[in-house]
Length: 179
Image 1: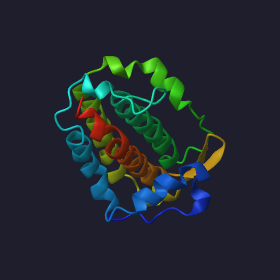
Image 2: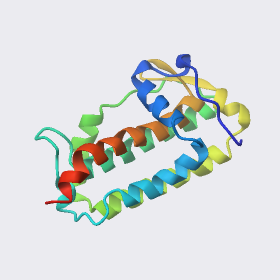
Image 3: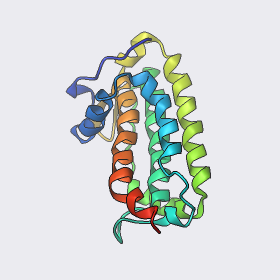
């Protein structure tokens, strides 16, 4: 596969529309998958682990928790992608992201470990996507009670990272670097 056309709105839940739209803004979806590894590595610059504990509001996630959340979702979306791209129509459950972040204890991880984990997860996904049968992107299943296609999940992988990178650059990093 050289390109993947954007999914139609019946291929994903409205909840994921922002992610799909953000992914569509990238010129090359395949390039974006690997470029995001470098972008996540570069984003924190020379932040210390202590600075990466910064939260932009008391009940918001820390920078480490945001990166840990990216890893959790990379795993969840990749599992969904595996199942759907193998033409498995078994309904897949949702997950509660706040519970996952709370239970993970990401603030106890080093920022380097969290970033390395993202890279390993994403590189595995790139290999899977690059070796997927062409027709597999059209396969559909369901997740969280809504239809989902393999194509939409690939777009969602990129768009989810775009969404949180924008938040990090707008709300978190400008303040954290001054701490």
